[in-house]
Amino acid sequence: MSDLLERLRGRGWRLTAQRRVVAEVLDGDHVHYTADEVHAKAAELLPEISRATVYNTLGELVSLGEIMEVSTDGRAKRYDPNAHHAHQHLVCSRCGTIRDVHPVGDLLAGLPAEERFGFQVAAVEVTYRGVCPGCSTA
Image 1 (cartoon, helix red, strand yellow):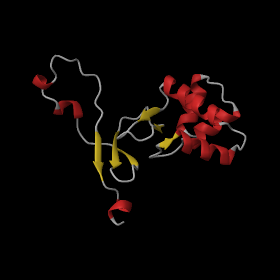
Image 2 (cartoon, helix red, strand yellow; image 1 turned 90 degrees about the horizontal axis):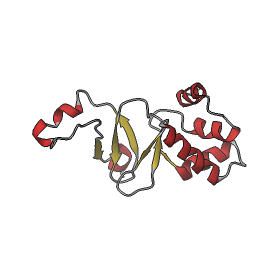
Image 3 (tube, rainbow, N blue to C red; image 1 turned 60 degrees about the vertical axis):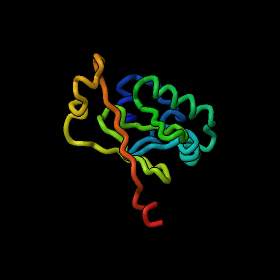
Image 4 (cartoon, rainbow, N blue to C red; image 1 turned 45 degrees about the vertical axis):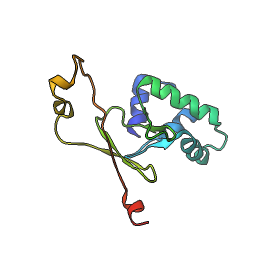
């Protein structure tokens, strides 16, 4: 069973066939699908699943904090099931591929006190950008 499915079961979230399929599609490392991609993959497993059900389920999962919405460079929102594992993102500036990365060290320590302007900083989000191997050979 996937990490996401286990977390949802632990919450007592009612796992209908449609919700289960959406959670199964989101299972795995480096998963960052758009809602349309989630729908397409879910429809392969459960042909009768509607686009509205997928969008509603994704919205519920975001509200629960079980998945994150990731937006990069004005592209379509993508959904990341690794909401409970600290990580940053590496994004291909050509094709938009997103990979989860785990930088070493305290990213917050890189922001000196005088650059915090009195803020009580609670979180850091860093996006690394570059060109993926597939695009660099094209």
